[in-house]
Length: 217
Image (cartoon, rainbow, N blue to C red; front, side):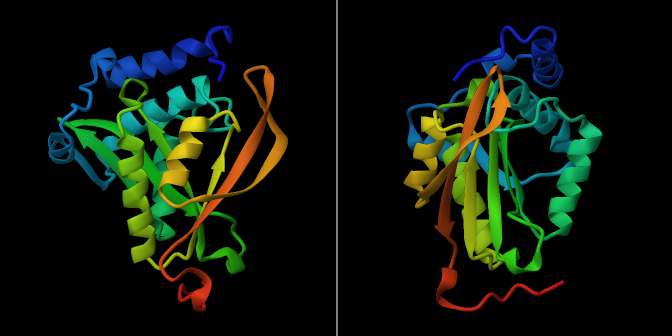
Protein backbone atom coordinates (compact mmCIF):
# COMPACT_ATOMS: atom_id res chain seq x y z
CA UNK A 1 0.00 0.00 0.00
CA UNK A 2 1.46 3.33 -1.04
CA UNK A 3 1.42 6.24 1.37
CA UNK A 4 0.65 9.76 0.22
CA UNK A 5 4.06 11.19 1.10
CA UNK A 6 4.41 12.83 -2.31
CA UNK A 7 0.94 14.32 -2.30
CA UNK A 8 2.25 17.69 -1.18
CA UNK A 9 0.55 19.94 1.32
CA UNK A 10 -2.38 17.56 1.89
CA UNK A 11 -0.10 15.25 3.85
CA UNK A 12 0.25 17.74 6.65
CA UNK A 13 -3.49 18.00 7.31
CA UNK A 14 -3.79 14.56 8.84
CA UNK A 15 -0.69 15.05 10.97
CA UNK A 16 -1.84 18.47 12.14
CA UNK A 17 -5.26 17.13 13.16
CA UNK A 18 -3.72 14.18 14.96
CA UNK A 19 -1.25 16.35 16.84
CA UNK A 20 -4.00 18.78 17.78
CA UNK A 21 -6.20 16.03 19.20
CA UNK A 22 -3.39 13.70 20.34
CA UNK A 23 -0.43 15.88 21.39
CA UNK A 24 1.51 12.67 22.12
CA UNK A 25 0.05 10.63 19.29
CA UNK A 26 3.42 9.05 18.48
CA UNK A 27 3.38 7.46 21.94
CA UNK A 28 -0.19 6.19 22.10
CA UNK A 29 -0.09 3.51 24.81
CA UNK A 30 0.15 0.12 23.07
CA UNK A 31 -1.55 -3.13 23.97
CA UNK A 32 0.57 -5.24 26.28
CA UNK A 33 1.23 -8.92 25.76
CA UNK A 34 -1.09 -9.68 28.68
CA UNK A 35 -4.46 -10.42 27.09
CA UNK A 36 -6.38 -10.00 30.36
CA UNK A 37 -4.84 -6.56 30.93
CA UNK A 38 -5.76 -5.55 27.39
CA UNK A 39 -9.39 -6.55 27.91
CA UNK A 40 -9.68 -4.55 31.11
CA UNK A 41 -7.79 -1.45 29.94
CA UNK A 42 -9.51 -1.03 26.56
CA UNK A 43 -13.19 -0.11 26.55
CA UNK A 44 -15.48 -0.57 23.55
CA UNK A 45 -18.52 1.65 24.03
CA UNK A 46 -21.08 3.74 22.14
CA UNK A 47 -19.45 6.86 20.79
CA UNK A 48 -20.37 10.26 22.22
CA UNK A 49 -20.29 13.85 21.03
CA UNK A 50 -17.09 14.39 23.01
CA UNK A 51 -15.31 11.75 20.88
CA UNK A 52 -15.74 13.69 17.65
CA UNK A 53 -12.44 15.58 17.73
CA UNK A 54 -10.54 12.30 17.99
CA UNK A 55 -12.74 10.51 15.45
CA UNK A 56 -12.38 13.38 12.98
CA UNK A 57 -8.59 13.25 13.30
CA UNK A 58 -8.42 9.47 12.96
CA UNK A 59 -10.62 9.53 9.87
CA UNK A 60 -8.66 12.43 8.34
CA UNK A 61 -5.47 10.39 8.57
CA UNK A 62 -7.20 7.43 6.90
CA UNK A 63 -8.50 9.63 4.08
CA UNK A 64 -5.17 11.31 3.39
CA UNK A 65 -2.84 8.33 3.77
CA UNK A 66 -4.92 5.21 3.20
CA UNK A 67 -7.32 3.46 0.87
CA UNK A 68 -9.98 2.31 3.33
CA UNK A 69 -11.95 5.42 2.38
CA UNK A 70 -12.33 6.61 -1.20
CA UNK A 71 -12.79 10.20 -0.07
CA UNK A 72 -9.98 12.50 -1.19
CA UNK A 73 -10.48 15.40 1.22
CA UNK A 74 -11.10 14.83 4.94
CA UNK A 75 -14.40 16.17 6.27
CA UNK A 76 -14.39 18.62 9.17
CA UNK A 77 -15.80 18.00 12.63
CA UNK A 78 -19.22 19.44 11.78
CA UNK A 79 -19.62 17.06 8.86
CA UNK A 80 -18.48 14.10 10.96
CA UNK A 81 -21.04 15.09 13.59
CA UNK A 82 -23.77 15.27 10.95
CA UNK A 83 -22.87 11.81 9.62
CA UNK A 84 -22.81 10.30 13.09
CA UNK A 85 -26.21 11.77 13.95
CA UNK A 86 -27.71 10.47 10.71
CA UNK A 87 -26.44 6.94 11.38
CA UNK A 88 -27.73 6.92 14.94
CA UNK A 89 -31.12 8.26 13.86
CA UNK A 90 -31.26 5.42 11.34
CA UNK A 91 -30.79 2.86 14.11
CA UNK A 92 -27.16 2.02 13.32
CA UNK A 93 -24.51 1.56 16.03
CA UNK A 94 -21.49 3.89 16.18
CA UNK A 95 -18.80 2.65 18.57
CA UNK A 96 -15.56 4.01 19.99
CA UNK A 97 -12.50 2.25 21.43
CA UNK A 98 -11.00 4.05 24.41
CA UNK A 99 -7.88 3.32 26.40
CA UNK A 100 -6.63 5.41 29.32
CA UNK A 101 -9.06 8.18 28.39
CA UNK A 102 -7.92 8.33 24.76
CA UNK A 103 -10.09 7.38 21.79
CA UNK A 104 -8.01 5.07 19.59
CA UNK A 105 -10.57 3.97 17.04
CA UNK A 106 -14.17 3.88 15.93
CA UNK A 107 -16.50 1.52 14.11
CA UNK A 108 -19.96 2.00 12.75
CA UNK A 109 -22.59 0.35 10.61
CA UNK A 110 -24.40 2.14 7.82
CA UNK A 111 -27.17 1.21 5.42
CA UNK A 112 -25.69 -0.80 2.54
CA UNK A 113 -28.18 0.88 0.18
CA UNK A 114 -31.00 3.32 0.83
CA UNK A 115 -33.82 1.45 -0.94
CA UNK A 116 -36.11 -0.27 1.52
CA UNK A 117 -35.56 -3.85 0.38
CA UNK A 118 -31.99 -3.45 1.69
CA UNK A 119 -33.16 -2.40 5.17
CA UNK A 120 -31.78 -5.53 6.89
CA UNK A 121 -28.30 -5.16 5.39
CA UNK A 122 -25.53 -2.96 6.77
CA UNK A 123 -21.98 -2.11 5.76
CA UNK A 124 -19.24 -1.89 8.36
CA UNK A 125 -16.53 0.78 8.67
CA UNK A 126 -13.57 0.68 11.06
CA UNK A 127 -10.85 3.29 11.58
CA UNK A 128 -7.92 3.05 14.01
CA UNK A 129 -5.48 5.77 15.08
CA UNK A 130 -2.21 5.21 13.16
CA UNK A 131 -0.03 4.41 16.16
CA UNK A 132 -2.65 2.05 17.62
CA UNK A 133 -2.87 -0.17 14.55
CA UNK A 134 -1.79 -3.79 14.64
CA UNK A 135 -2.74 -4.19 18.31
CA UNK A 136 -6.04 -6.03 17.95
CA UNK A 137 -8.29 -3.01 18.45
CA UNK A 138 -9.94 -3.38 15.06
CA UNK A 139 -10.93 -6.96 15.82
CA UNK A 140 -12.49 -5.99 19.14
CA UNK A 141 -14.40 -3.15 17.48
CA UNK A 142 -15.68 -5.33 14.65
CA UNK A 143 -16.75 -8.10 17.03
CA UNK A 144 -18.67 -5.57 19.13
CA UNK A 145 -20.21 -4.02 16.02
CA UNK A 146 -21.44 -7.42 14.83
CA UNK A 147 -23.01 -8.05 18.24
CA UNK A 148 -24.73 -4.66 18.23
CA UNK A 149 -26.11 -5.17 14.73
CA UNK A 150 -27.45 -8.60 15.63
CA UNK A 151 -29.18 -7.11 18.67
CA UNK A 152 -30.91 -4.65 16.31
CA UNK A 153 -32.00 -7.51 14.05
CA UNK A 154 -29.92 -6.66 11.02
CA UNK A 155 -29.44 -9.86 9.01
CA UNK A 156 -26.37 -9.29 6.83
CA UNK A 157 -23.17 -7.29 7.16
CA UNK A 158 -21.24 -6.35 4.03
CA UNK A 159 -17.61 -5.26 3.98
CA UNK A 160 -16.45 -3.14 1.05
CA UNK A 161 -12.67 -3.13 1.44
CA UNK A 162 -11.03 -0.35 -0.52
CA UNK A 163 -7.96 -2.16 -1.81
CA UNK A 164 -7.40 -5.81 -2.68
CA UNK A 165 -3.88 -5.39 -1.25
CA UNK A 166 -5.37 -4.73 2.22
CA UNK A 167 -4.43 -8.18 3.48
CA UNK A 168 -4.80 -7.17 7.13
CA UNK A 169 -8.37 -5.96 6.72
CA UNK A 170 -9.31 -8.95 4.58
CA UNK A 171 -7.82 -11.31 7.19
CA UNK A 172 -9.59 -9.49 10.02
CA UNK A 173 -12.98 -9.87 8.38
CA UNK A 174 -12.33 -13.49 7.43
CA UNK A 175 -11.41 -14.28 11.05
CA UNK A 176 -14.84 -13.06 12.18
CA UNK A 177 -16.84 -15.11 9.72
CA UNK A 178 -16.90 -12.97 6.57
CA UNK A 179 -16.62 -14.70 3.21
CA UNK A 180 -15.30 -13.08 0.02
CA UNK A 181 -17.99 -12.72 -2.62
CA UNK A 182 -16.27 -10.72 -5.33
CA UNK A 183 -13.87 -8.02 -6.45
CA UNK A 184 -14.76 -4.80 -8.24
CA UNK A 185 -11.72 -4.19 -10.43
CA UNK A 186 -10.35 -0.67 -10.85
CA UNK A 187 -13.40 0.97 -9.28
CA UNK A 188 -11.50 3.92 -7.80
CA UNK A 189 -8.38 6.01 -8.40
CA UNK A 190 -6.39 7.35 -5.46
CA UNK A 191 -2.74 7.91 -4.55
CA UNK A 192 -1.78 7.66 -8.21
CA UNK A 193 -3.14 4.19 -8.87
CA UNK A 194 -6.32 2.34 -9.70
CA UNK A 195 -7.92 0.57 -6.74
CA UNK A 196 -10.10 -2.51 -6.63
CA UNK A 197 -12.66 -3.17 -3.90
CA UNK A 198 -12.98 -6.54 -2.20
CA UNK A 199 -16.55 -7.48 -1.26
CA UNK A 200 -17.14 -9.74 1.76
CA UNK A 201 -20.27 -10.61 3.69
CA UNK A 202 -21.37 -12.26 6.92
CA UNK A 203 -24.84 -13.34 8.06
CA UNK A 204 -26.14 -11.76 11.27
CA UNK A 205 -28.40 -13.54 13.73
CA UNK A 206 -30.74 -15.91 11.93
CA UNK A 207 -29.67 -14.48 8.58
CA UNK A 208 -31.88 -15.48 5.67
CA UNK A 209 -33.63 -18.32 7.52
CA UNK A 210 -36.54 -16.04 8.47
CA UNK A 211 -38.18 -12.95 6.93
CA UNK A 212 -36.85 -9.57 8.09
CA UNK A 213 -38.45 -7.89 11.08
CA UNK A 214 -37.07 -4.39 10.67
CA UNK A 215 -39.95 -2.07 9.79
CA UNK A 216 -40.50 -0.53 6.38
CA UNK A 217 -40.28 3.20 7.08
